Length: 404
Image (cartoon, rainbow, N blue to C red; front, side):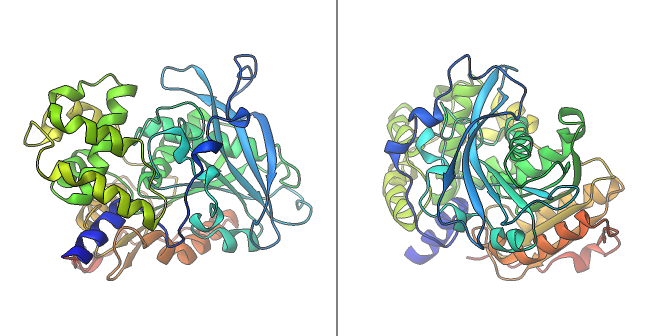
């Protein structure tokens, strides 16, 4: 039972296989703070950058702070990491892949750019660098920079993703190319889909060649309805409620019992980046197993239901090809939910490549599908016709074997 509980918690926290811990002392240092004067400039323009060590495959990595757009249309700073392959840029510039990370937390010190093993957390990074692609990895707003982070807020994530691509184009040896793809996992899968939805209007100077997502959060109403029933899901629910109460002003006290709020606050100030964090958060979460919500289903209560629907991505424009990866043993983002999104996308006229990963749960699906995702993205950069699995029957779509 203990092992199964830990598996569930590891999945919901979307962890990779490399242990690391962010340095709380690193957040909110001078690098991550932007003055009002520094915020003046177009979205995606660099405020500052600094070299980072230990990038793979001879690449040069930079920690960056760049301009973006906040929840109310205000100028904000967003941090992240950009990794550039070795050597001069080829004629026409390098392709850029935006990596949208899974859940790491909702407060500034949980930024991936502060992590010791940040490069190991980017699924497919080495393969992309070896094929000449730049990787732009945003932290999202409120991670690294001033919080709180708008957790699972699709438009906010997408603007930060797109502006990281703009920022990458100003770094040495990237070149003046304008083509990019987006690749994300879980929360980052949601960010990837929203990037596809807004890219043309938000950044008309860029050319999005494809969207790839592993176990994306496609139906937040379903996710919120499912997750509060499990130990790991309570972690996810607590962070969502805590974040949305701050960024949207939603009344958390109407759905969370007063005696549960200290635990929700503690969970929302802990990061999710290592096996040590899993153990710590499991202990922190225990009181929620006895008392947590004052309603049977948050997703059926306003304004939470409307907010969940607002942050549920619709079908992408049909001209944007889509790669989806889904583990058949995922009990956080259930396979039938991803299959349903695929079917909606096919109905919209898109070309969708669907990769089912047998026996794999939520936490490892990005790692296990990275080779296929990278190959798919590089084919899109090369202008090869996008394949499609939309003609396959529903019966052939996936063997569903949810882990117990």
